[in-house]
Length: 388
View 1 (cartoon, rainbow, N blue to C red):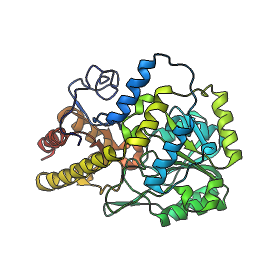
View 2: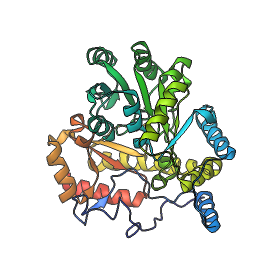
View 3: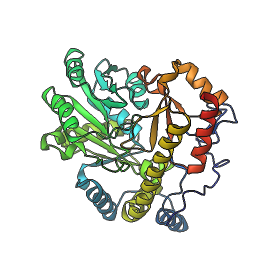
């Protein structure tokens, strides 16, 4: 049994989350609930594997072995009924890096790239810095629930001559776990119009009871010819600092173009410690993840009940996946800037303001709940003090 109530201090560990307030333009006295890493230590088996490798003392160029691919395939088959063939895997230092490579590999400057705001902001940042055109088909917020606008999606793909679609599944920040029917609708449109899909499935291991993550390439065989599936152990096991991700590309031609782009950018070497940690996590991490999921489910229940009792005007958008809650403050009628200021300077909290994910996020805040319940209670008390 793991104890997630007791947290080790992360101050002074070169933590982006806790040591970089001033560098990021934040007051030093705000409490951090923003960036998507957990306050929980990685599984002990992962720690031990890293320590054992350190004892070897040599950290040269590295290639994964057969056991690595067996662990990868075993995990995804146990959790998602997805078999992964070794030859389909291309490794990168992270999923954001992989998305950047995909945009460069499969589109040209000026081409349209589709996203669905409010969405993880590196998506549209990558499109802009590579000189491509952001095409947005916003999610629709109806009665506390987000859905895709399929008609708008197809119309803009045709009108804007979209070449690539970046899918967020499960969705960050709104917490949707897309159903098979929803995924089929947009994937069929992409297949019909020769649009390549980059499916960011980094949060695939965090789904709540009654929901199931469905890998896009598991739905129809033809989707394998148009899809790059981006995965990483970083969210699941709190390993973001080890810079390692696995991208599944069944189509040989797409895989070749992707690898060529990586080679041109000089990113063909792999993280030794990332490989070691990933193999250990996917081999031994089942029980640890189950306990984390149970703890997160408890935190969600606590937040909904506590806000419901003390600050009912703030609505929790029902989370289906991820450990990032999307909080609806729109009842207060504040602009995004006004809401951010109250959260930062009055509540003394560092959340992610909703407009960071697009204008559609105005009036919302994203909070990372992968921390102790007592720490979350402190944050909620601060919000209640300011808004009640």
